[in-house]
Amino acid sequence: MKKRTVGYRGKLFRLEERFLRSSRQKFQFALALGEPRESDEMECIGVCEPNGKTTEKMIPLTGKDIIEGELPADLVLLLEKKFFLSKDEINHVMAKVNGDCLEKVLRQHTLICAEKYYEVKHKRNRETFNLGERIPYAARIFDEKEITALVDSALDFWLTTGRYTTLFEAAFANFLGVRYCSLTNSGSSANLLAFMGLTSPKLGYGKICRGDEVITVAAGFPTTVASILQYGAVPVFVDISLPTYNIDCDQLEVGLSEKTKAIMIAHTLGNPFDLRKVKEFCDQHNLWLIEDNCDALGAKYLYNGEWKYTGTIGHMATSSFYPPNHITMGEGGAVNTNDPQLKRLVESFRDWGRDCWCPTGHDNTCTHRFKQQFGELPFAYDHKYV
Image (tube, rainbow, N blue to C red; front, top):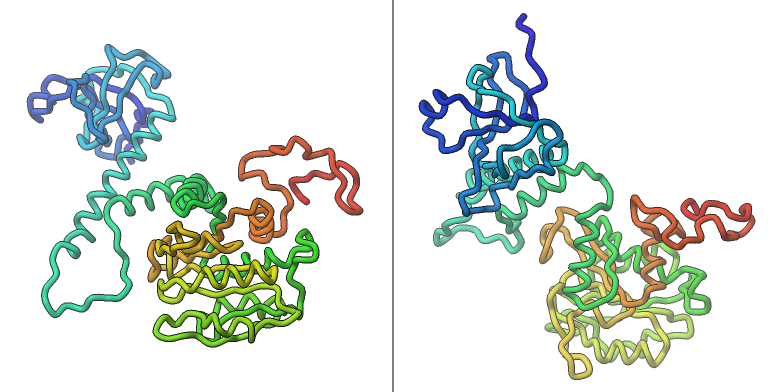
């Protein structure tokens, strides 16, 4: 068996003149993306000197990207100019790029391939509509941007909350105009976390205890009610009004008792319930308000003379990113709030009850990691694991 040659990946070559003539390529250099195969051919991309034109499918190559050798000048990596090169078509090795540069090239090249895959596999099915074809009420609407973002995330192979989570939480909160967004694995989990956050002893007298009552509607989605039952609180069902299918606000007083602690209801099928009446009722009786906003992302309500997004007026709100909803992650949900204490409680319940709020990969952001007393634990017990 022929022994394979290694040591070519990441190296920059000057190409033989005969190769350039036979292939009619307009570049003089090549970067090896991999090692030679059994046929002695290796996968490469073209490299040339800048000509003033740049696109997102080109990557500049400068001296800071080099760990061995040197460049004749600043060059440009042509990600779409991929070809196979045999060892005898190499004039000489000029330089070797560093790992960061090679990783960037391979990532961008993979994303270009993913975009081309979308064009072949998915785009052709979205170009035309014929009269009489079925129109699903909820379907996956995506283009090459979603495909490449999905592949880009997979290349990180970060299997829990990571950079995309951080980006999304900030962008989603900014879109709604709220201070905080906490991403979850589903809208159902978002409802559970929002409700459980209100059961924390840190809320003092305002916390929801087992046996306390929560006003909700008799015709709604199961997970709006499931979290109430799971904890051991008592859902008090009131009727809906037609044609909105939202809560009949005239029934609020009927559902109220000395045990009532909260109202947890949804904006049904994207129709906002009467937020003004419900919020005034909550304020009057010192009740928590959780807006289940899973069906209504993007809907607005005229509140105190200002158009505001639903999901921004209650103490907390929830969203779902399951495929039939307005935007999707496949699975996913979120809890948003303007209250920093509620945000911390929600994320503590989400993250196994942790008290530490340091993001993944960071430590001691509070500067008191080893300076606190927690119950009967030894003084200076590591806060990260409390």
